Amino acid sequence: MYRARIFITLKKSVFDTQGQVVRKSLQALNFDDVEDVRMGKYIELQLEAADKAAAEAAVRDMCERLLVNTVIEQYGYEVSEA
Amino acid sequence: MKFGVVIFPGSNCDCDCRRVVEQVMEQPVDLIWHEADSVDGYDCIILPGGFSYGNYLRAGAIASHSPVMGAVKKAAADGKLVMGICNGFQVLAEAGLLPGVLQRNKNLRFICKFLHLKVEHNKSAFTNACSPGQVLRIPIAHDEGKYYVDTKVLAEMEAKGQVLFRYCDAGGTVSAEANPNGSLGNIAGICNRKGNVMGMMPYPERSAEEILTSADGRLIFESMLRHLRQVWK
Image (cartoon, rainbow over all chains, first blue to last red; front, side, top):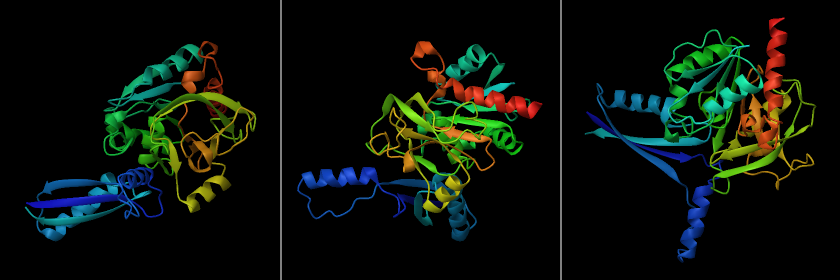
């Protein structure tokens, strides 16, 4: 059994409206050092796979086909034995 | 001409679409549950507005993998007309039947109001009953309507006449002030390269009868009928 942690964020080239609003709100709380905020999604799932490489391949396929809209989003993942 | 209106769990404009097709355009129409694996026999498929699957993950993402969408893709490949309105547009974009994506509105608010659309050209199955540059008064009601696509694809779309509707003011001027949601190029509606699949954020079925203060949306349904009658000739 493997555990996958998937991180989805907007591509750098895509303006992040929510992130900008959160940044402004942080500045209102005097966190003036915050220069940029990017909002994203975090997905955690458990899956059976023959080995780690197979688990990673399955996660990539899931990301490309459903979990991520690659027109505007990018993703990263960490797979470990659960 | 036979119309089919797909219902996903969470669709809520299906009966409005049915009413316009049946009562205003006087054409036969069926409601199609999302588990259907065939849409054979229909000339036009409408994906209605609403909140399919609660818009979980991304608006339209889950619905784009519904069983019926395989059949809708086949219908699109066969040249049938497919129209996605609001959430239906989001589903078509997620399904890859239309380019680009619909993001959260720029002001992060749900916007519900009447506004104006400029018809880019009338050489499409969805605008042939309009005149080029005609201004239509049609309402929007959405949270995620900011159209985005990368600049290379946008240039191709513009060159191929795939942009059908842009947000404008009452006089037909396309401006930043007339853009309700931050859409790239004020884009409100587009079609695929083949011209038989169209998505738009505004609701033509909510403005197809005078009692609703505008009957402009009817022109889009009329365009589809004209197109289908020519195909059938």
